[in-house]
Image (cartoon, helix red, strand yellow):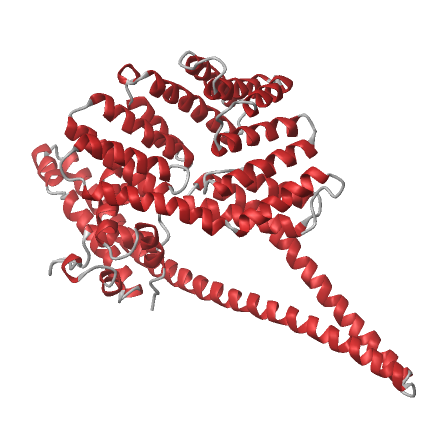
Length: 528
């Protein structure tokens, strides 16, 4: 691979190191999985000592928090329950603080602030208070970055600085935490040169971890970018991304920003490699906000790659025509003819490679068309159903209005009250669910059988005779239709969001599949 900065020997060496590290990514991931396996086995076997189980759950959470959101979320819920069983307010607050961290990492701002607001800092240790206040600073900073509005963003940044100042009170001067927060403040206050100086202090710390190095290098790369020193920014992003791969860290931005640097300098090969890696990491971790950011850059790079392939294909076609014409003109010269034939054979191989790539893209397009046809069928069925259903409701409302007008005109208030009491909301909601179930099972007649195939026989879900689907089936039916947001599902089904999380977690835990594969298998269930 060609480096983005051909004249920068340091960048070339760091780029080669990163590509070599990426080639060993599975090895680094396996090391983290091994640590997790040991801890989860100990966690599962601990039946008596809840204090020890809480500590084990906390260690498992720490392994997952920058690695995999779903699993970190599950273990944050588990340690909250254990803390409540221990009747330990301090452990409960620590567990909620851990939950808030991964909610922010996943881009769930509303849930992050709700959880942080529920934490009582007076029950935390000095170290946990540092984490609490700096997490609030990060939350307001990230919200300000996400919210592009110039009216509200300054207020978010001001709160971020205020909470960072509070967090500093719980640090030891000269420590990593102290310097890290000072660098954060330097960025927010525009003291960019000061931020670079702080990074140099961090690098001289005697026991800095690879993860701490990755975070600090990424932040300082951002500072160099603001200063217009892109060579320095690029080198530090390479350092950060390499450390992230070695520590199996998936909640990261360094490699995503590297792809953008390479793309803007015309290094399409490295840009494509890094954006694919960033996309896989964001999808694996389930970082919602970052997936949205990555998709835009990925589309640009993918489009540029397709343009280059198409240009090469046209060049090859033109070249083949020229060679053919030349061959006709020099038919008498056997040596030249043989030479041109060899060139044509090479061109033909290149064309075959290009054609194979085009056939693969056509196959992908056909698969996409199948998905679009399925989506259109789903839309047609549900639009028809809801148009018919809403028409019936409008007729009911119109009849009810006429009755109310008549009764109110005759001052028959008791009859009006009786008419109002006769409206059965629960029945109407059940009718709505019944209609949804009917249309869904018409589109996916084998959904329940294929859903139950993911469980042992004793854990399978079979609806009662008077129902088409249970609540659990209905939740995953909505997920199959593309409605993955738990908050939206809770509003549609009339449950709290915690109830939806509980249903989902309970079902996944009973499945014969790993939790992280379950929803993908649900999405793979095909319509008729």
